[in-house]
Amino acid sequence: MKVVTAAEMRQIDQDTIEGIGIPGIVLMETAGSAIVRAIERHYPTCQRIGIFAGKGNNGGDGIVIARQLAHIGRDVRLFLVSPPDSFTGEAQINLQIAENLGLPIEEVLDEKDGWKCGSAEVWKDWIANCELFVDAIFGTGLRGTVRDPIATVINAINRLPIPILSVDLPSGLDADTGHSLGPCVRAERTVTIGLPKRGLLMHPGAELAGKLEVIDIGFPEQVVDAQDIKVNWTSATQAAQWMPPRPLSSHKGSYGRVLVVAGSTGMTGAAALASEAALRAGAGLVTLATPKHLNPILEGLLPEVMTLPLPETDTGSLAVSATSTILEFAEKTKSILAIGPGLSQHPETVSLVHQLIRENRERGLDLRIVIDADGLNALSQDREIISLLDSETVLTPHPGEMARLTNTAVPTLEKDRIGTAQQFASEHGVTLVFKGAPTVTSAPNGNLWVNSTGNPGMATGGMGDVLTGIISGLMAQGIPSENAATLGVYLHGSAGDIAAETSGMQGLIASDVLKAVPEAIFSLIQ
Image (cartoon, rainbow, N blue to C red; front, side, top):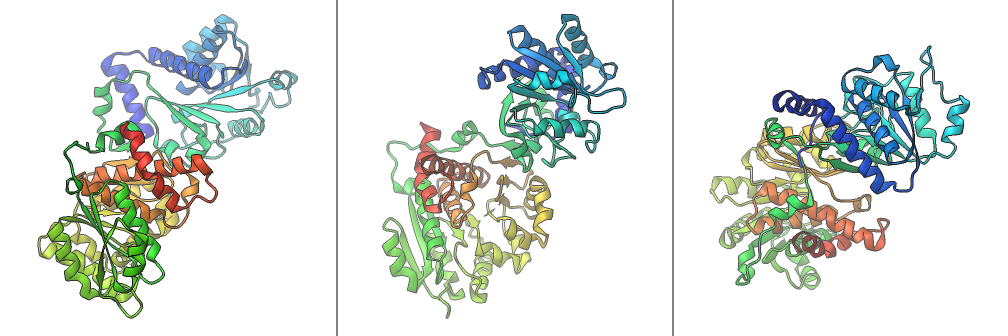
């Protein structure tokens, strides 16, 4: 599903009205009807409902909602946060209809632009038994910081112990960044119109929006396609399309091989998690290249994983002399190379990472590579090495690793996760998985996928190692890197959600997610 900026959404709306000829009043009526159906689904017992409406199209949607709720017997009162004579276009038409029908309408602001209803007896009496508020103040029409008197209105709404449903976007939220522009409505649920807006998927917007639902109001496909929108929201339907089929005649060789280059003294768990995750994701064969002194431990931990014991440094990490053996094995077996989990930052091991990438390019091996953890830390020590990577390479940094790769502070990167990922992937010609809340995956051509799965319980050690293995296992099955990375992120989060449903988020660990990966895959293909 496409994810839009406010400008893209406005253009789609305008092109639908002016280019296709669907009147704006029809789109507004369709949106209002769809949101009323959502209210009936989610709040079937709420009879007493207050609608807060601004003077723009978002307010017009709110007035349609008020009229239609009254028509089906709900006890509705419309609260205008702008003077009636300031309403224009379709919003003004719908306000006139509401007045003609005799709907109860209150002006929230008095002649001096003060908060009127907060102390008015009619307000106190009416909200005493109110069960739901609908926020239709700004939507994507907000320009600049929310100021008084509407700032006071929003703060007052938030203080009331009543659930709030926001229309399109919580009022006060920046549709593009997810940051609040002054006081912002804290919604229990947001029903967004047409397509999800970027700000609804980024934090803190995702929290302010509550549960998110997207409703289709009939924007023509060709109008949306004409915008050449690069940002997408990963859905189960899309993820399922990337899963490769499993013919009855297949065998382990049909699903590819992964060579995991991982592990050092004290970091055997990272190597084990990544290796098993590659198998859980469906790879046919997985081999773990690891320091030779760890081999007995890992062979005992991983009965289904083969091992490749290699020369080691004096501290028990992989030595640079292992370079040729790793590349020869990967070339001979046509393995996906997964580099980084638990490698350590020993100078010689850092040199190993650099040599693997350099020789892969110089020798024309064209190995497909996934780089995580200490593999990324090695890249940050010599950023010129990144230029030797290609679009089939997947990098999976968390914010701290991304900060080291870009020499940029984490808060700066987090201000625009989408822009950060797109810029890095385009500049360096790689597929980038920028882990976090939410994780975003960007290809060099600007295509970006915002993940829709996962939960806070996954904020614990080892989760990234599992993700590295999942992505590598999917690539081994022949899935292009952009799709494998996006699908891997989706499955990783889905497995986390499945595990959390069983035992909650508190105390969730990486091995719980690892065990749930097959169920996450099954839920897509059943």
